[in-house]
Length: 450
Ligand code: HEC
Ligand code: HEC
Image (cartoon, rainbow, N blue to C red; front, side, top):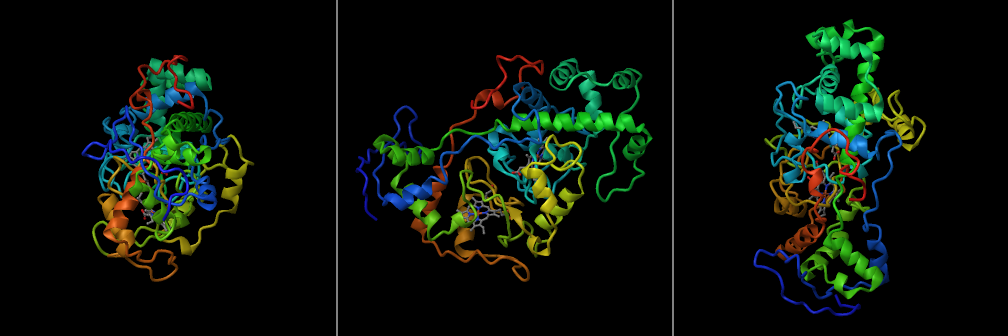
């Protein structure tokens, strides 16, 4: 490997723990060949553009909706035990994950909590892709008995009761229906929702739901969906800024030596392994380092034994069955690309055990990794890709892309340094906590880009 661009002094300005002093960034020597082909290839990874528009959500870029959504995101009242909010599992201080292998809400979950950083770049949401928009996804944890366990009826009730939320909601979506205020004032219980997939229809909440007149059920559904759309508008803003890797790519384009010095020699060598011997870019590609598709990495399971989680196979069925997808009655764009994707989606057996490729940006603070959080840190991830030790199944239908990479210790360290260079500038503090008031204050509302 030779340097073809200008050599940059390898000034030793790093602190002992490897962190670069923010005031005086260390500049590094160029140790890889950055001629034409590589330069061009790197442009498909950087810069990260603005999140793709979501026409299925008409308020997706509305700051007032995002402010309301942010209030709801942190609101523990939206749970059956009054102690769980979205932020309980998606903790802002842990990269919007929870540090656990399996999520813990009202009860123990079956999968690991993924990050919400850069989540708006994914076209299928959750590990199994059972949602096709952020707003559709938000509805599921609210009513999932293991996660938050509230009901759409109680959600409507809380928005009606809380003056701040009611006003904020009204500003974005219009007045709440009159019957609702009367029902709430009259003390009627609105703990009501339709049965979930696989649940009997005679539970207390389902019976109460069935007893509501159809127009009232339609009103509650609309409020539920609007809350999801507001939460989605907040989550769209969870995009971190440029990383050292982005500055490096910028430096290549501009011939700017200062920026070219953003990647340490180890990270530069790691980049070459990432795109070469490591074959990581087969799946982790594009500006968010995810192909957005589903693969079976044959990971060892958390508790040993063969995998039982059907992943994408079940996820596709749940998505197709839902009335909340992009082609359904609650979508604001039933003819666009997302709706077309639903119309051509089929459940196929090859997808058994597949999970969506995660983004590799902002991996800091979000260990453990994978859909069961079965790999405790990045070193364990690289060790797995290197040796495929404990790989499971891979009998029928499963894709055989992964081969043991047999990485040397130095190669693993280099790859690790490269992954560390994908951590972006932190989010604005105002996005990391509940908004000071749900009452909309246009001056304090977050706007994209931050
Ligand atoms: C009990 C912990 C828990 C709570 C509470 C919770 N989540 Fe999650 N979240 C998870 C887990 C686990 C997954 C992965 C689900 C799966 O793949 O089956 C997930 C997935 C997601 C995803 C998809 C991310 C991706 O990369 O595809 C989004 C978006 C999300 N949650 C947002 C929310 C919002 C909004 C709320 C509140 C309304 C919420 N979550 C509440 C644990 C939680
Ligand atoms: C065949 C496609 C594919 C290839 C090749 C691949 N990955 Fe992955 N990667 C995935 C999928 C899918 C997951 C999630 C797997 C799961 O949870 O079951 C994942 C998960 C990860 C995670 C965990 C992220 C998280 O949020 O939990 C890291 C880190 C990672 N890959 C890095 C790499 C590196 C580095 C390489 C190259 C050495 C690589 N991957 C090669 C598809 C791939």
